[in-house]
Image 1 (cartoon, one colour):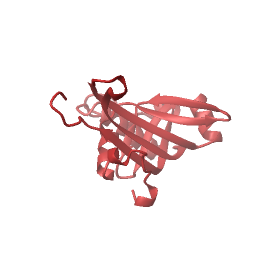
Image 2 (cartoon, rainbow, N blue to C red):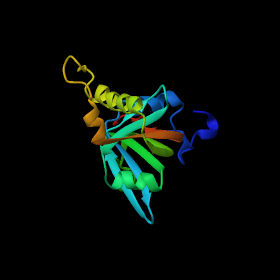
Image 3 (cartoon, rainbow, N blue to C red):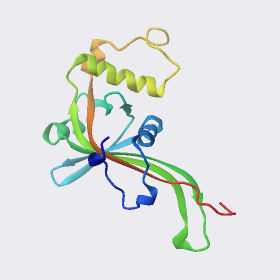
Length: 174
């Protein structure tokens, strides 16, 4: 992502240095949270997701109808986040207790994927991410048209992102 599309975290000392680190987190993290604005009511939806590095977008799916779809149809502006927690870091004072972590925040626009080939690609990407050792036509029946009709596939077009981490601090007891 070009520098003008990067978001600078407040703690620049914890910012991930390059896009490859952000992409690595998006490839590895299992659950993402999609934030939507439903009028004056925020809506947060946890989802399994697939980051398509070639297209630089995030795919997920929900039921064919429901709150996520109706909000995206009215307001496609979204924020997406995924994070992981590492070890707990005790300290001598309450204020200094901490944890290792890594996180990504994405700003962009969600769209309902209408193209059947892209729907299949997004769903297959999800299957490949979460079940990397299983293959369609070998271990399970490939996606069929009826299944495409029963789900909504979304693509988040990434406009800006940032990542940050807090690794283990140096020290004798850490």
